[in-house]
Image (tube, rainbow over all chains, first blue to last red; front, side):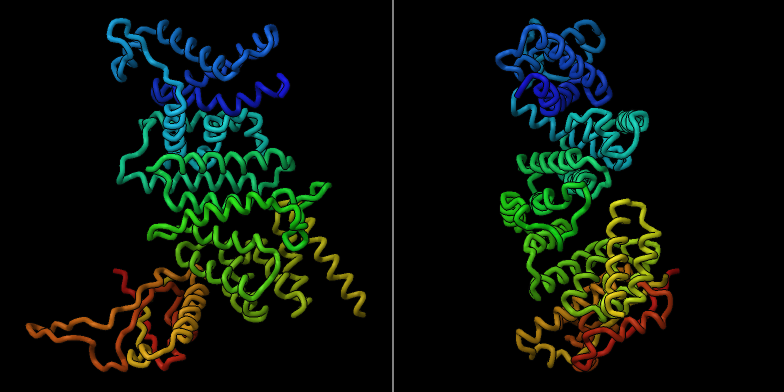
Length: 416
Length: 112
């Protein structure tokens, strides 16, 4: 890797580690100080490495510089230093030297604890994702703005407000105690799931950013599996789900950046390694008494890694959606269940059920009915597709629906 | 939306005598019916089946269940949401219990 790519790459991997360790040491109220020290360290790196060339061990160099900057900061601010000393163990009674522990173990612990702090229920989920991207994934503010289809000012404000709230709530950089940890873990998983979806479903044109978001979500989820307090079945189920979904990433857009629907995808482009990985995690998740929604979603995603239709495939998917809906309702699950019903039991039954869903404001509802009515009652199908077209805000969706409408009109013309 | 308790009754003897295939088919039918209600966002609780054995206490007299007649024994319950008793009743017509000659009693929850 040339020097030009090395620093951004290292920023991604090491920024969050340095911030996590320093924030744990200073306390969450001083997270901005930790971020400044980390940013300054990278600034120094880009200044010195361009003059002196790359050091032999770039990571060790970064850690050494970050440590020095942190110690200098503490030495300049005597009150702050006393406060820190008062709260932690010191390495030596005589010199009162503060140990800035950048060992692998402490880095891993600090990052995990930071994850719980960042995915705190007191701040809105957009802010949780934004903070996760900034602090845990080392994304730049511009990158985050691009991912959310907004501007730097909005993101800066959002992150600033979130940090203020975390300060007000006295959120600590520590794993929640046993009785709370299940509930808090559930929050963390929701945030990671949303982060993944930002990458998977977003309408951002840049597929590199989107893939990045998916990979970061998977990396953070994997971190949870490395600590026995947090390596619960639901976490493995979520990892399985993310692996299965990601496997189709390269097949989902064509050379022009247009969306390729599942049926039209070239399944030789599906990543078999990711599918195998998903199966591995799915197996690991099938322990314990609790089936979480991620278990059902992972099961459904597993069936979608098999492109060929079969009665068994759709019957299994239908039953998994039944279970999922019994656990937790969502309009998407309801619509997908109805589609599975049509494949397992026929379109007429599915149409009857679909019309009870009361989702007329939802463009996906009309897309579904357009699909279901096709071949049964093409006039109704066209009406629903036109409604879907008028309701959707995504250009990619508009293109797909328009293509369907054109195909139907052509078929009608050929018939007459 | 109002909430309604659905009380399922069936002949527990004939229910117990079904073959494994019949039981599996029945489970699938129940999952489909409840799943359909859940998809409409009208399922408050899919409820529980009830164990057949139990007791009845009346005053100071305790008797072993089941209760009333075996043919009409309560086998389980669910709670659904609906705009009216009529709608809840319509929904109940789709219950798989009718296939085994059972019944559904529908009672609105009285929220005070």
